Image (cartoon, rainbow, N blue to C red):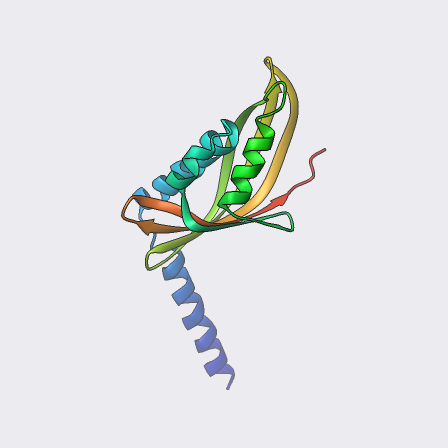
Length: 153
C-alpha cells in the first residue's frame, strides 16, 4: 500500500511539473507585457477606453474583498479623473508562476506602484495578485484578476 501511495504522489507531482512548465517563452513575455500595459494604460493613465483592449467582456476583478467589472472600473476611473491633480503612477512587477491549460494561463505576481505628484513621491503601494488570461483572436486578454493589498512599512 505504501508503494502505491508513493507511486501516486510521484505520478501527480510529475503531471503538475509538466503542466507548470508547458508555457512558451513568448507566451510568458506576452503576459508580462499585458500586465504592464494594463497597469500603465488603464490604471496609470486612468484611460477607460483601453479596457476593451486588455480585458474580456466578462472580465472580473476581485479587489480586496470587492467584486469589480469593466463597468465598475470605468466608474472608478471617471471619479478619479475629477481630482484636482492626478498622481503619476509608476508600475513594476515580480512574477511568481505561470500555469497553462489549453487556451488560458493562470499566473501570480507581486504588483508595485509608486504614486507621485509634480515629481514628489506620495506613497508606495503593493498588491499580491493572480490573473487568468485567455487567448483571443486579438491576442491575450485578462478574464479575471484577484488582488490583495499588501501592508508596507
